[in-house]
Each structure stands twice: as C-alpha cells, then as structure tokens.
Length: 309
Image (cartoon, rainbow, N blue to C red; front, side, top):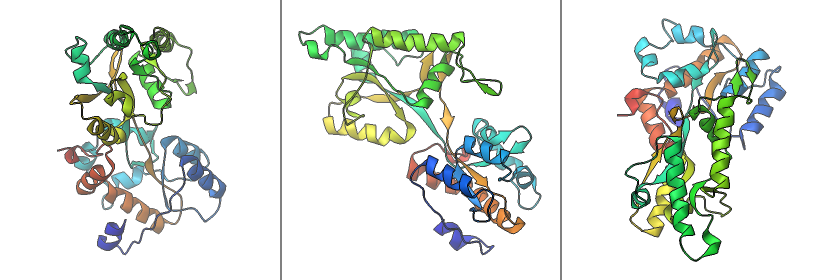
C-alpha cells in the first residue's frame, strides 16, 4: 500500500484497516451496507460478495475490466489462471478481482514411503489406502501397544479438505443453486475415509504441534495448506532425520484434486471517483511484479502466470 501511495500518478491515497477474522469483517460491512461509512474496497471471501450483491451494496466490475482507458488488456486477463479468474464471475456480473489464493494439500513423507515398498506418492484412493495402512502395520508389528494407532493419515476436519475429498470422488457440495450432500459420490468418499479410520489407517492427532507427526514418522500423510509449507519444512529441520517429503493433491476414484480458494477485492458502491480509485488499486495489485513480491512474502499462489517463472 505504501508503494502504491508513493508511486501512483493519480494522487490516490490508500489506508487499510485490519479485522480479527473473516466473520468480523463480514459483520462490520453488513452493519453499514446501507450507510455512507463503508470503505471503497473490501478484501473478502467470494460468498460474502454474493450476499452483498443481493443487498445492492457492491459494484459489478464488468465495465471496469473492459474500459478502454482504465480496463485490463486481453493479455493481462489471459495471464491470470482461468480457474482463478472465473471464481469472481457470477452469471453476467464480475463481483471482484482475485486478491489471494491458496490451496489445500497433503504432505507426504516420500522417503518413508519408499522404505515401506512404494516407489512414489499415491495418486488413487486405493494407493492411498495401501500406503497409509502399510505405515500403520509397521507400528503394529512391534510389541508396544500404545502406538498401534499411528502411522497413517491424520484425520482432517477442515471444510476445504472435506470438499477436496468429495471432489476427488466426483462429488460436490452443491446441486445447481442449492447445497446437497446426499449423492452416491459423496457417500463413497466419506465411506472410504471412515473405513480408513476404522481400520487404523487414519488417526486423530491431539498434540500441540501439527507438523511434528510427518517429521517424526508417526504419520505418513498429514493435511496442510500452501502457506504451511515453511512450517512443515522447519519441523523436518528440527529432527534432522534426512527424510524427504513432498506435497501431493488429494487422490480419489476420479483422479487428483486441488481446491483453489481465497478472498477477492470487492468494490463497494460509492461515488464514481472513489469507485474508480478502488478499482485502480485492485488492478495495480494484480500487476506481475507486484504479484511476484506478494507471492514471495505470503507463500500463496501467484495470481499471474508470468509471476510463476
């Protein structure tokens, strides 16, 4: 923000206000959506933008994107991964510009996997079961009863993880415009996970350090987020056991899945001048050189293909 304030040629000055969590931000906007005290720009989750749009509080950015002077070129739009660009498009409306995106992943101890007899990470649910159960069998083969539950996948209740498993089986959380979980695909996904747990190929970690089990070989696979890669790497540095680990997508019956998700820049309704100022800042944040800096600082996904090089 300081860089933009210093460099932009329009004399636009941006100031930021932080909130404790997403829910606090959402409530603050809701309480003021009919007043004149809203900020011009909000970094918010896409589902919040849907609600605010129904209340008539946000700006459709379609005309800004295509504006001859202030818009984005076709090359700029093509440089943003399609899966990310489309997330803010609802019908004919564009409710935002992507601000940041992360993805839910699985962290896998590759060296331990090879010692268990597997040449590579699992890419199907059957391979996932075989490897996690083999890790558990290693603990069951000793004389220590207290560790018989260790070795497999650590159960993860994060909503994005649950959705990733559903998608990997061809399932979904929606049917048209309504939420729906009662499908055969969803049932197969959750049955697969429940069987893993019942057969001790998955276990619930209650310790304070979520990154220790992969490094100390009490879990072959653990859940994680893109932003947690450095924390997991630090855990391996502490134990210094020489293990190699990698990030893998969610394996399922229908292939591999990575769920990409995150907040977007939402322009709130205001005067035409202030709306334009908000748009110009959001557009500036998507410049390739800014995205390169942002990605290095946050560890999240680059929002431009050219920033991935």
